[in-house]
Image (cartoon, rainbow, N blue to C red; front, side):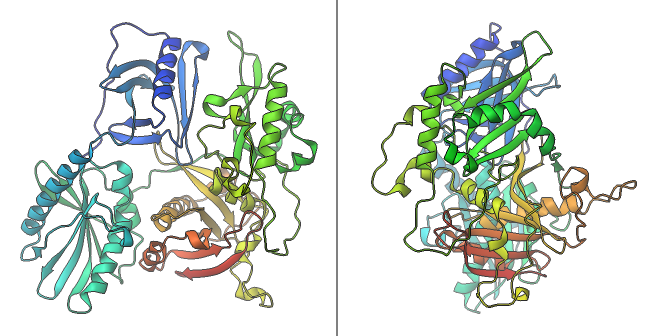
Length: 588
């Protein structure tokens, strides 16, 4: 269904910012698995996302952020409704009120309700398909779980047949979450591949028909445009379940991609602006551990301190109440455990920081990789990404750790951000030849270690902030989109493609007539680098045992216009990044 305009419920009595904030805090305290919804779609799952509340300047400000999205809203009111909390919000600078909903869990339907909706949808879809694609007949659509092949019950899958001709079909109903709808193309590719294997030449599967709810085709449409038309025919349809109307979307016409870059901050100026906060934070970090601190500029007014990608402190520049004078606040911890650093809390926070640095370190491996020494980057931007944890528990600083250090929660937290931190420091292992005596020409084009950017924001809408893991450039000036995973992810390949599409879009924008600089350079990236006009190259990097089996299957169906490298690294990557095998495809 298309997004519906929503209007917020007005409470009977006006609420003060403090009352609104208290209502939100109380709800989140009572519901640890809470989620934030907008127009029925999950924006933030607070089991992994982070939030902060402020009542400064006589308004309640709610800041939500995760590894994928970032949003700041002014909350006007908070109204309890049927086990949820409805928030009337406004974007800064806008008078229009928008409704957000805090729910106890992202999945509010009972198992029986879900199964009924899916069964009803399968029958409706079969009826629509046979009417729309006669003389093809539709076999019984299945929604059974098939863990071996990664098929879940949310997707109805089947085939359309007419003699030896056949199509693979997959659909998803409008009651499923936005993430489930967006994941349909991965499952569709796997279903087509399985149908062809089972067909054994007896049936000729022309391609795949993907059916999504009306108004929810945008992401799938953008992805489908970059699949290989010679490998299969690709069709995308939108279904209005109420009218049973099926409408085809033109996969060759993706229109304008809704995305814009955020300017890269001036790191040199920020170093001076936050110098006092940096000195104050370093005063509570053990002297021998200070080289491990990573500084990451979130904005011109916020600086984060990270340890192997895990944010543990933050400095903010703000305005004093009823004044234009600037204030500088330094806090340690995250989320509900964020604590200001001052004379009263200094000793406790110093103990917490010492525990963190003692427990979050790469322990000595049983096998020596012959690791080469390298000095950690201490400058702003020298590694580390947006924090991936929801709460850093200061109260748990004294937890005893014994036995296997790899089981320590602080060691295991935010593994992808740890991996990103290491690659931000040294990209050379990704393009080093696997054979020790091989010539440089046998390795992938070398990546430029001086120009690599972590968590590059590419905004696709008012509340959608896509964050590229790493954006770099090869020695010959070709942009490199680097997508990282530390665990199995069925959608690894297509998520990397999403960022490749965005980077390509920005790269193709016409250069400035006066300066000759492209869009990336106008926004502060790759200054002094002559970028190649060739499209970006996609690098997919994950530990060898955590690359989902579906990844290679999906990559087979990528258009040859998408140049990609799949790099499997040693499982002991926290000690040293070492590529154990690589595969590539597309035009070089």
